[in-house]
Image 1 (tube, helix red, strand yellow):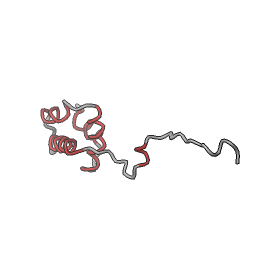
Image 2: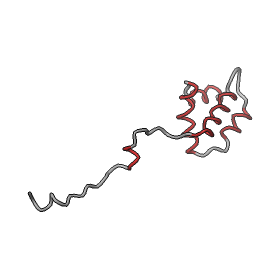
Image 3: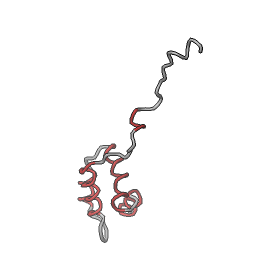
Image 4: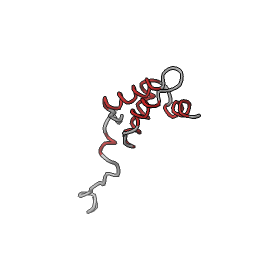
Length: 89
């Protein structure tokens, strides 16, 4: 046995979260509520612009990321396509 093999120290290259079993993002009830508001604002003919602005207006970039992940999970619709369809002139 050589002198280096006894005191080997390994350096972890990955954050400890990567080893967790469940890597899904915890969106929370607030994100679900925003998704619901978006869905209701875009339901039927046209859109409720004020409701849509109220739902998305004060969100942070992190919240918008979570919304873009969570919305399709709840409503089986692509949020980007929905916004393009509803908000384009």
